[in-house]
Image (cartoon, rainbow over all chains, first blue to last red; front, side, top):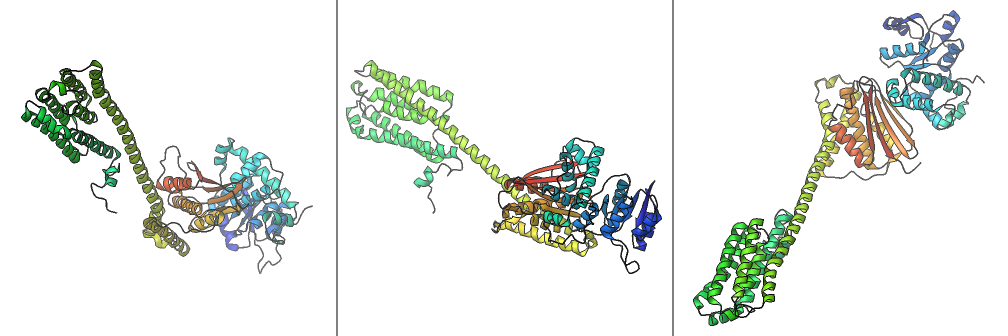
Length: 218
Length: 398
């Protein structure tokens, strides 16, 4: 069974989600990323809420900082949040998250996404894939091969692996592999790209990404 | 302007009788009648001389009266039937013509039988045969072609002095001229028939086009009304109900424009991204991801915008009613002058090879977009989802 850790400041979520997932065992549910890192538990995936600061834990890491801290601690992170701003979600990918799922998704969709990340895959919603596609087309990201570009275009249009497999005459597992490599490549690239460059490529105003973007590792 | 039944404009209008063929026959009938009347007018100055020089003046008067009566019957027949004579009238006229030749033997002196109007029979026979050449069946025409020239030859040979070339010339005139007339008439009838067939095709095309326009105008409206009429409408949240009302107003306006014949108000080109966003806004109950960054600059004509909006609405209505989708992605892209609008849902899908497209996909999506030079491709996998791709040319405002 897949072992998951849940990081969420909402007591109800921490208490309820474990009982609602069928194929995933939530071995620990904590309210901060720091607490999970301190416990040094081995899990297949960390399900992470982005908004963790509240009156009782005003100094908790949150957002891309929490993602980055967990990734650096060696965890596979799947963001599970109500956040819908695409560049914030893209910043999570840049910070090393392997998956992003909205809390508005049906529970079976969310569970499937957690399992995909736990299995080493990548789950990125179409709007974020669309944002990555913009960066690729505007030559902010130039590292992708032809197949990876095709997979990115398909994912940005909402196509499933089955549909892309039929179009590209490749197996679904091959396509998942391309996608996983792509997300890794993009994440690595974004971590080393200045927010100002991303802002220019996306047509955002200067400073729009300053707070949202992860600190550069370079 | 009201045109009288016998006005030249109406009589020369090839479609006045409902078809080009009927108009042609009516005009050829008038021509045949005019030819016969013209022959009689040429004959009449010789009538006194014919009576005076005849040994049987009473029979001469009878012969001329018969010729005049035949002409009158022909004119009445043409006026009544709106065409030249058919077989029955042809047989009657042939018998009458043979009788005229018979009376000619009795009333015209041998020295007058060739070369003057006292012996009107050869000229009248030519006029009559041209009239009969038009519509008679082949069998009756061959009978006419044998009997009347034979009677003419016998009549001319009985003349006091006739040379062979004149005799041959007379016969050839009686055979060749009406035959050419017959062929020419057949040819023009064929042209008239082709014109009628073309007109019928155009009428059928116009009917289908009107039917298609009606379907395109009504389809989405009918679907929205069906949603508004559902008993569980109250279960929708306020936002979804409001969006449905907005859709109903939009579709009502579309139907009203169709019924009144009003054209779409001309406006500036519109951003395709805004068109897609507007269509998506009508479906707050569907989870639609709108991704338009790569085509945010694409502008389309008002007509294209209207067609795309109606098509997207129709597709999304299908998704709402049939797909059971959890997520819809609407993605706009532009590359190398071609814009691509992709709508994907993760619903139940369908087998594109066996499922017959409904009015919405066929008329509102495919036909209406094709009229605006927008290509449509629909792909679907059972259990996986459906993808509709619209493609158009983007030529301005990069």
